[in-house]
Image: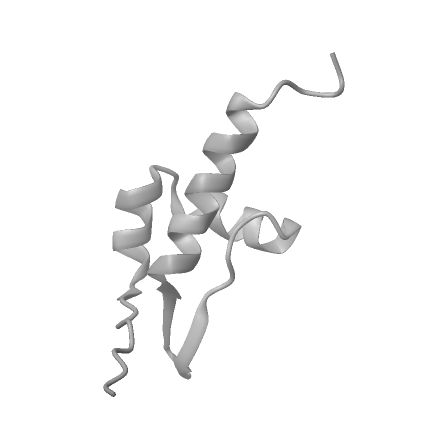
Length: 72
């Protein structure tokens, strides 16, 4: 029996900016607030984001936008 492991793609900051449509400062502000996935450190000067974490964040944003707010 063979087991296939899903390959996860790592994204650098320019790719994350392009995918989510928000700029660097806003991304790091949201990371500090805990509302955006934190980067993964690959070394002293290299960070990446897990593409599956970014996709999950996008799905949550979409779901939250479609769900009526309890504040209304």
